[in-house]
Image 1 (cartoon, rainbow, N blue to C red):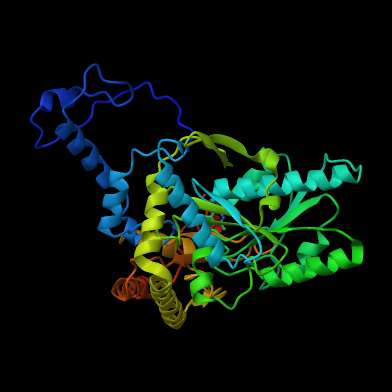
Image 2 (spheres, rainbow, N blue to C red):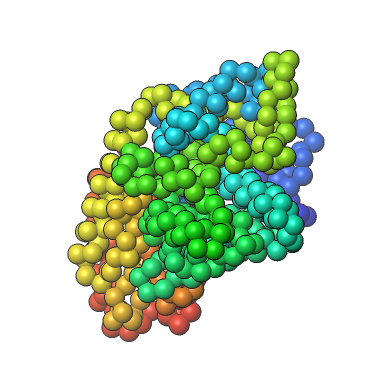
Length: 465
Ligand SMILES: *Cc1c(COP(=O)(O)O)cnc(C)c1O
């Protein structure tokens, strides 16, 4: 959450036009609790009118997070908002549904029959990544202690394109992040580059299935093969955690032939965001370990469950059950076919957009939307009068949120726009976006002097969600 600093000035809220109790509404202080409350209808109108100032979620092509669910799903969520996920004793059926979801995911991620995958729901991939990282750290420490070696310098190897949650993991749990920079046309982690950073203090390698920078999948199998060689040659055992925040729901239906999951022995754990391509509104993620042993017992706490105990692994305690129930609803109503249709639809729209944008003239594709339904594109080097940031600003004037950002080390020279196609983005919407982009590009191309601020047109502070 953004940290909020207290504001002393407390202006009154504007009066709602239709409110019956205008006077009370006019007295409502914003930054301290009012002496008395408003009636529900007035409060509803005030708050829902204020929220009109938020963006149009369906036009937001910046986020990976779900902005559309069928109305029956929204209804089911509203009906189950009172269930507390942690209270397994009071809500055993919700616990059962969580367990079914974990099983569904373990199967989707090709957990072998002879192994017993173990997992849980979380608030999102960030929490799931923390849990995955903690398990890696604990297991590394056990290995080192057994050999009588020091355990004070753990490190984690990853690409520089990781989502911020991995930097958080490293800072919060005292692990040195070792990041492989980008190089040339390699915009994510490479196998040899990962291995080169590994040593006996490496708790694991994080591979990303669906980089937020360009939507590309990292070569998990190549990384696993390279780590197999490292183990054969130098005796170093280094496990992989796959951050499949987006790809965990996409690859199993669109690219089932890609081996990135529990088919690879070295993959010890996987996370995904239920609220991205899992198609649920924000608040749910998943973490699955390949076996019970991959998850140190030490990290697990018990809660009451029908007079007995149930093991849990979480950073949070209380949390709504509705998110998990909504995930189960989506699994139930779509099935594998349905997920396949939705992802294929998004992928078709993404690839259509990418190919049309490549035709406009000044744009150069960095990716084509062939892995995740996500692609990035920059401007040809000869374009000097405007930048991708100007294009982003112009799209925003029409309500389209298409973020622009600069790539990290060693491709700081590359600035791109990125489009994330999600369920609910239709071909018609894509055509509207293309028409508007063509029109704006034509105008920008017609400039005969640079727009102001081209020197400053480096804005890197974009948080990849
Ligand atoms: C979105 C994302 C995260 C963080 O996920 P949340 O569910 O928003 O917490 C982590 N890793 C990757 C690769 C992501 O795309």
